[in-house]
Amino acid sequence: MGCGGAFRPSGAECPITVMLLKPSFIVADEPTSRLDLSVQAHIIRLIVDYSRSEKCAVLIISHDAELLLTIYHITIYIKGA
Image (cartoon, rainbow, N blue to C red; front, side):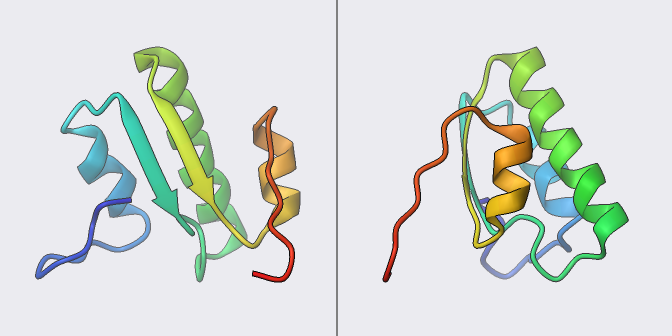
């Protein structure tokens, strides 16, 4: 999600940090990995709400197909990658 480098916020802080920049497109690579289920739900809701309210495109890269199917209309699977 663009939160690499010297400053590395936690999973919960990263989406908020990115959203402060008012992007029109967000690439979120495993934004909820290693987070407990309640925090995962909060982060995903935050990303979805932001994308709808700000008309921001979001690409979420995840191994959690179940999670993706619950929030997005278009899901692309890459097998054997």
